Length: 128
Image 1 (cartoon, one colour):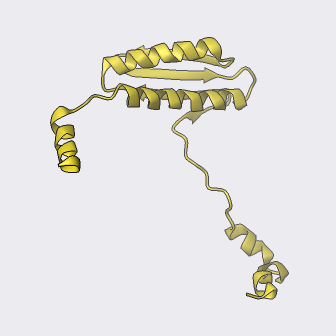
Image 2: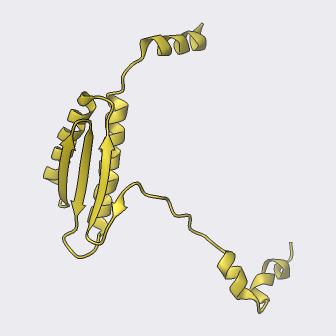
Image 3: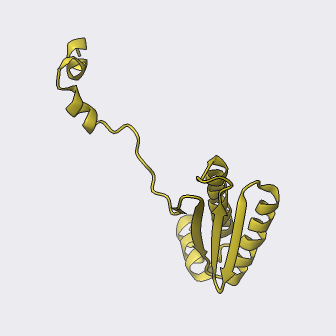
């Protein structure tokens, strides 16, 4: 491949159109709702046990975090609001959203219900 072929878009006067079609960053859609000075998310759990463990872990996280976090829970849902200390959501709040998502994933993993009928069939297929 020649250098002129590689640099053809750069050398052409029509560089504006090639720059518009160039998208180097793919934006990942967040499940958090960001407003000017806060971030909001609602978590829903299958069992009360998972909800209780999540609330305990969030309370532990609030104790150690410098983010201003508000937690509300009712039935099987937990609402989390992270308030910004400034007028905009900062890195501290974004880091807290990631940490809370990780706590939720950990709770789902560690306290998953074992479906004996379904899982035993899968194990038999794998090892028999």
